[in-house]
Image (cartoon, rainbow, N blue to C red; front, side, top):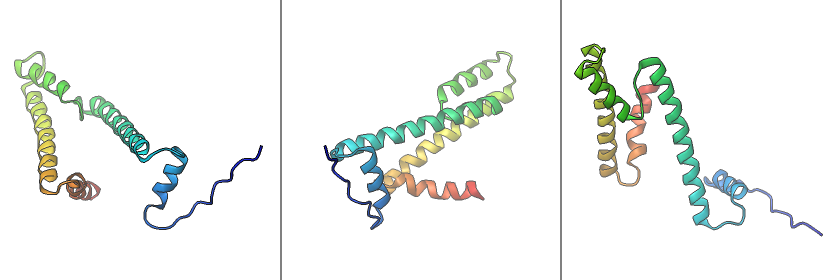
Length: 131
């Protein structure tokens, strides 16, 4: 039997790389399926990054970067005084507070710039981090 040949890849316009990726990942699938695949890929990337960051932060700084439940438990233990200095209670409170400020900042940005708040708010933080 003969195989149908695929048309050559055209790189025109700003969406050409995304269209190419879509063609190879989800050949002949509806747009809804492609959206589902993109969401799954982004969720997996975020999960990987969060896991990696948590391991680094726990081994180096004895706190969780993405899991506030663990920090609340550590804060409670430090505050009650189970063999942890009171300075540690202040440390865990600061970590929890910084996380909360990040959540509030995101919510404000989404309210201020609907549908693009995350990228608008992330740009200054990324610039500060790079400097």
